[in-house]
Length: 213
Ligand SMILES: Cc1cc2nc3c(=O)[nH]c(=O)nc-3n(C[C@H](O)[C@H](O)[C@H](O)COP(=O)(O)O)c2cc1C
Image 1 (cartoon, protein in one colour):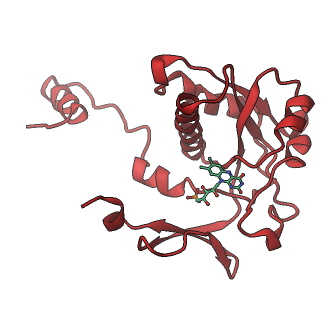
Image 2: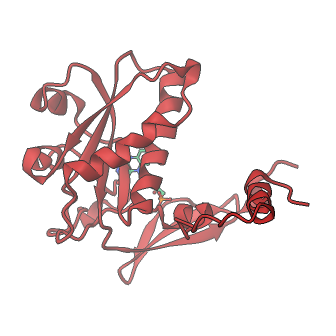
């Protein structure tokens, strides 16, 4: 007996002799989550255009929102529409200041500036997190990568792009050009990411230490 919706739907189709729909996506959520790392270096040969950014922002028509208020709005920036201005006003890899990331020639060139129509609050921030992660997962789904950027010069970017709303977070989108590995750590170990021989390591607290006794 099928114990979930998808399986029971498949069973129903099999019983009625209908063809099962071809699996459109072969990558599981587990895979998307693993691939969804924070990239600070991108392959400039892969140019992300406005239509790709629109596809990514479209996830916002399907995600949860506190009180269903949907206060987030999105400014799309591509190579031809001001990426250089964004680049001058963001900070990447603050925990590795000596590396001055991004490395020259690997700068991101497409951005989504996430704004809110109402002042920032706990509920707006929760919506923001859901939106940002959903968009990055969609980017991975499209074969791209990204980065959430909270360290940016709000005042300057607000002025540069004539934003009437408060920018809360920026997403960089592109084809990642870095090798990134997750490393499981116990609760009491340092969480700072680091680089060794060109590989970017991200410590993640292991599952045993995440679940409360
Ligand atoms: C809300 C938020 C803001 C962030 N802001 C920045 C930022 O300004 N610059 C940066 O390089 N990384 C930023 N990051 C990326 C984190 O450093 C990254 O998520 C963390 O190092 C873990 O790496 P991972 O995303 O690959 O798991 C931000 C992440 C989050 C969730």
